[in-house]
Length: 453
Image (tube, rainbow, N blue to C red; front, side, top):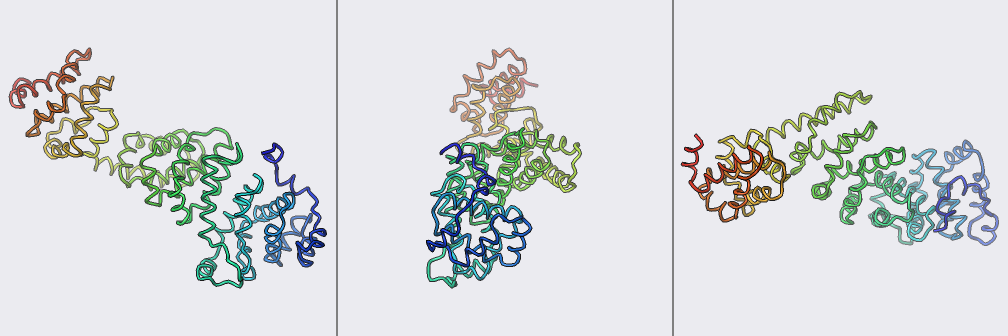
């Protein structure tokens, strides 16, 4: 891509003089089209606004027909800049594209074509314009197109066709941007608008788009990067209403990243959208347990102590805090224990020494071929934290004591040698609990308890 093309701005493009008369001579635009363009082009903003108020759909028809029939880059870019200028001044003008008088026009196709074949300027403007106009469509338009009701004899691009083309382009930009610094921010801005649509969420998940967003969730400092972070988090918030997307979020590192952002961000809009996302995810799958393990309750406390201008943010923080408290209560059982073991950081939380916990949950250790027991044994090889090692030894001894076949199972899983090594550990807490485990392994629960006493 040439450097001048890559950095082209709307202001530069709108300084061009386009030979509209020549296009009329060659019949690429009509006489009516030429009159409309003469009235509109190079005029002050208030004049343009009045013309659009008086006869907006006629201008849209001229703009769309030029994009459809004329292929000269300078002219195509110029018309895209005019449309972008018109929508930036008043986004509600997007509804003009859906006027009944335009039902014979394929309003989406010229923009969709430019996404694939155009310069970066054309791609960027087309994606932005398409996102705005498709979001502004009335429901009656949707039904009419779906039923094939149109004044046109030619096939009209449906909203679903548009969504497919747009999502494909957006995922490509996230993977392999057409512009080194603008490709990804442009795609994320469009997604922040389009992911309100359930069809777009579905296509985006099918296109493996969720995993492309996750790396963009990271603390930001510059104004530009803060805006990208905000729009990325806005996309994740919109996806948090869609179950298949939640499954993707659950298997990625999205939660630690979101919590890292909310912990360090001073930008209120970023904090708000992340907190709303966390509230949506709280009761989904294992998210609640992970939030507790990642220290979110304490982070919420810190956030509540800051001065926010948005009262709704404080309400949402309170709701999230209450939800986390409920989660902690529910997780004082095997789910919470499992989370702790799988994270590989063990501490003397009450359940480890609670006889009721072991009595009620001992058969849960059999799940997935004794997965949790195997992880406990692996921790003895991999962890260097004395507290974790001590608790792991203690929990193995509890399993031996409480499970009818505890000694046999722990021996079969080859835990004995690993626990024996722990008896030579420099930390007294580790050696004490390793000794208890070995006693129960060799002597059985009854005699080991007698020796402990």
